[in-house]
Amino acid sequence: MLLYLAGNNKLITNVRLDDAQAEIIYKWLRNNIFVTALDLRYNNITDVGSKHIAKLLEETATLEELNLMNNDIGEEGAKDIAQALLKNETLKKLRMSGNKIGFKGGMCFAQTLQINTTLEELDLGDTDLTTDCVIALATVLRANSTLKSLNANRPILFSHQEETTVHFANMLKVNRSLKELHLMKYDMRDFGITRLSEKLVDNMTLTYLNLSCNRITRDGAKELSKLLRKDTALKVIDLSFNRLGDDGAIDIAEALMTFNTNLQTLVITSNEIRAKGLCALANALQMNSTLDNIYIWGNCLEEPACIAFAGLIDSGRIALKNTDVEPYVVDGTTYLSELNHGTRNFYYAGPSHGEQALPELAKFAQFVTPSRS
Image (cartoon, rainbow, N blue to C red):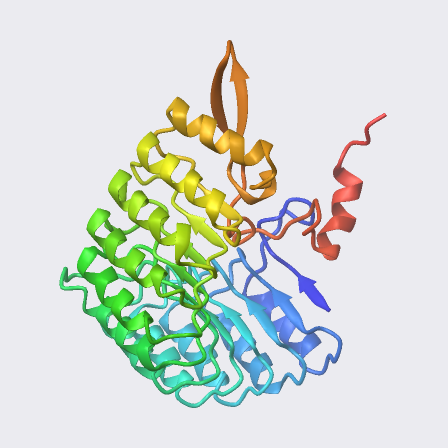
């Protein structure tokens, strides 16, 4: 059962929990056998409250998921939670993103991953990880065989030598358990993605790679296209907010057209791609029957590109729910409008409506949503 106590959902409450409530939660749940997931995102829990959360992790026999996103947990709180995981044998998913745990907290989690054999998903995005922390995490994952998902987005880096990317690349060559890796905002350039592409040739486990918000250009896209021609295990690639341009899009399209049969989702929003590159991708989708999710908003949507993607959507090749654009016609000219679709729509807030709605939120939504007569 999920206990949903997020502080950013007005359907439930306007009050955010603090350290005193964290102690109450600990006392209430330490012997509870029904709650398996606890969502405490967007509250005001600090290092003091983290001590109670850590004690809960040490004593619980059922808790498998814990979300502490965007609280006020610092280095000491992260240390307490990381040390608690040395004793915990139930937790599989932990989200710490948005808490400024810094160098000390990041190193503590790296040390924990050397011993803990239960944790499968760890989110340390936007936690002010330093270069040393990121390298430590990459080094530990060379031997860790249980972690399946790691988010290490937006570290604090002061070098342009891409040491962190190189360490992750070397790790991916030998790791056989990691399925999902997020390296967003790494100031990654073509050198970095070249190293990743070279090492991923030997990796048949990683299925989701997030490289959004970096500095990858057409040369990096060309190296990535060489990897895609190898038909690796990758099913989702997020390249949004880079600078692939037409040439980069064409290289990827050529790889998808005849060589790749595994990739299912491609995110290339805001990449300075014009009609030539977008039309090449649309043509590739006519040949490729596996890729059924593509996101292109934020590029230069000239009329030839609009017509090409309108054809894909109208023919049913791409469903509206699997893309972020929808065609419409004004005075005989085809345009594309934006749809609020993506690969991580519910990262910050749980869904309360639609097919993916959490039951715990849907029951609140029915009381605040006006009925239609």
